[in-house]
Image (cartoon, rainbow, N blue to C red; front, top):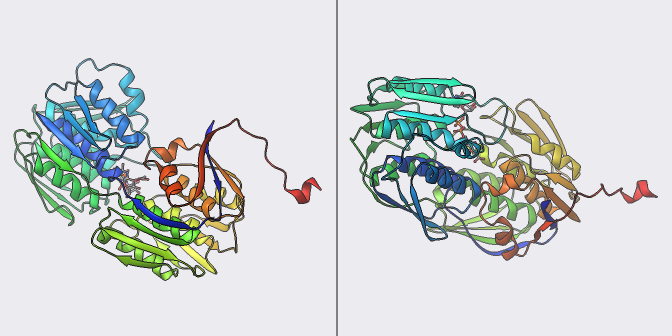
Length: 436
Ligand code: EPU
């Protein structure tokens, strides 16, 4: 079984290059189905989620050429949705973003089919707002036997005015993709404003779409008959950058986090400053240093520009080492605290009550065998392992590799003692005071 073995205690020093944004990539790759021609994507992260989506497109008849590790060309001239091989569904079930195939297939063919999506388990993850949006655009959407099927009632989607009842990244992306080639104009209100929403709009526009207002809470789209090929470079990953910032906060040291948009990191930087972490901003980097003791703080997650839910576990791990009592409130998901149980195995003092976690900082965490319960929970236990005394073994690392490009290589280059090893499951080590 592959796992990460981390010997904690090394401060981090040096420079880390941030990869392209996962949540932009997983929206943009399905959106490429709308493009009749070649679209070239640069700064694409090399993670298993993008790999899975590229394989799905290949099964649909797209030709994918890798020009260098972070640049691919996708030619969707001959994509189709007829007689798709069964193997495709094992891939679509694996990831959350596979539901964007529905909007893209509807936009291109007026009909669509995919499985219900997979992804991290944070309790109930409804898709009612996706269905509401697609229905408003004139699609008949059915969910049956684990599949989503949709058909544009008049053969082509029609622009509409849509108010999303909940600020949802997924529903915003879904409707943007579907409306880009719908007939007429679409207005989507109460949309998500995350950087990856703006990135998707910029991608669609560079392929000939007309999408305005991304980054505000109203998006207006003039539907185009079709989109043409082009070239697009994705934005850097806000959450990957935030994860390395949290790692420096927990382990100590000083790291230049390069290839970032510092503005996207404001909410994370200001929380870390409250915790006694120094942050200097450059044009496309942040320099993060922590020498003294960490201070406690309170965090509440909210849609952008609030503190991102996708950074909650990582900041939770840092707060486990910060003097005093911190209160973390999860404002987006019902159940995103599975990592706390893992951190408790490392000596963290934390309690969860509903959507709130109370974390009393300890002087030092101690290494243990822990699980990556999901992608960001996995990042949290890695961060805890870097700060802990002794050896931490992280299991179920496939979740981490869904969203972090070469996390082991990047941390090792900063001086961390972390390795990916293939070793059999071991019996738990009995603490010396029990073993006598
Ligand atoms: N919601 C509904 N109905 C819907 C859709 C969402 O009630 O139809 C609710 C959800 O239950 C949740 C809230 O709206 O309470 C926000 O969900 P959202 O739709 O914004 O989440 P998502 O699109 O499923 C994306 C990211 C997540 C990230 C959230 C919030 C992707 C592929 N995933 O999920 O990223 O946590 O937005 O920012 O973009 C991650 O990267 O680790 C990750 C989980």
